[in-house]
Length: 349
Ligand code: 6CS
Image (cartoon, rainbow, N blue to C red; front, side):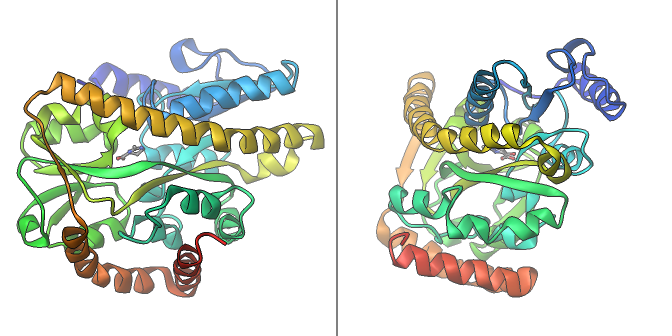
């Protein structure tokens, strides 16, 4: 079971204070100070996909720089919630973080395109091409990130999202009156409203206890996260709708990035490109292996894969969420959604 204890909350607060003061060598807040220590904060715990990404990033950067650059990784539970981490990168206290559109979409409305259901291809190879760090599609978001003081290094998928629920949900009507936990960006609320649910935005660390206390009836995340956060312990169904891909973004403070010596910027860009294939393999493996782990640990779990007809009913219901997206994300939103539709139809070309 995973949740943030009060002692961890205190640690988050103390670490936040020390980071804000620019002192990273304090106790459990990091791995020691130093001029070229880059701090990288995660929205996920140790053993997660983001943790594998950051650890590989650390390995690549330290190796390429011959130890000139050191990277300290801060897993979820050491510094703060997703929203707090992105603020720390925006104000330059942290150099790097993961910023998932499901939360960061509050700051960049057009980023919520990734929270719309049924927008990606069912073919992962197509989505990978679209989301590649050098793709024209990724570049469409550069200015929006820059406008918030951060540089977008990469998007990458962490797997298809699965609903874990306390009852069977196979058609939109099954969501009537259903309290579904979602990440905190407003479009996610509209997406689940379009299915008839009552969405409840919560931060990641609050989900387990909210399920346990029956304050919510279900939540949505990739399989690896459901396993490592133990959400399966407090829900009875795992429903695979293949509706939304979990996409995250790797960000760095813009002024920090612009001010890096050319050589260091080069190592950083190289590392990000090498990570692209690596992390795709990791998320595939983690999601596959952890489903087996869940099945072994909870024998009675009900696993339902929606068929195309069932998915079609959810797709149809979700049209109103697209309209909400256009309202929220304006002209830039229209551009990124139309471009994604076109590229998916063209197979990522
Ligand atoms: O549900 C969430 O809030 C989180 N889920 C994952 C898989 N990663 C980060 C995010 O904050």
